[in-house]
Image (cartoon, rainbow, N blue to C red):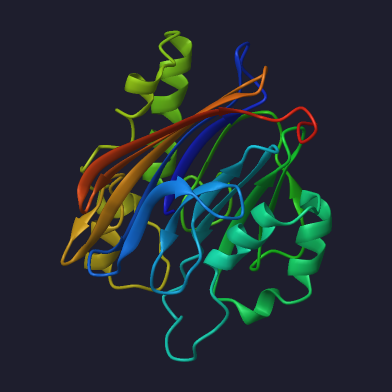
Length: 253
């Protein structure tokens, strides 16, 4: 995923309200949201076998974005998508898992990883020295650290905050977010090591740029009672998928 806005443990009905865009090269094939043999729901990167976001009915959630530096070329490293897959299919807590990941984090290109077991959410980037706890409230992340105020992160958070303030949190309204194709002004662009024209193209919430762009939008509504709805709207190819389930009592925290 390349842009995520979410509200964590700060809503009377939902413990997690999340909407995210995945940006990718259009020629890189992926499978739609589906139930994996390991028991969790996620899409799948068919090139390297991992995933970018998923949730397990036992109460485990994970999401990944790349950390952009503009220097990651050449040497093939461990696939970042397995960071999500491996957490969802094992029995470790977020902290136990991230402590293991810390030991080999330099083996990956830059990443941001969000993990939850339903009671806490933790965050790790391999460009940060420590594991962090995600506080209750509104958050956003793209290809820099959590809550870095890039224009599209700020606008994504504001859009979600407006939805919550208007008491309009439902599937249809949630999936209408992160569709803005407007670019940020040059003076507000971050500097991540890529040329200015690329930086500008990447500044929109919803990307369209030379064979690369937003390939799907995903929404998650996870209630305090354990009811989960996950929706995926794909643009390449155009289709929509929806799953609904209840977190198992033995897996919930």
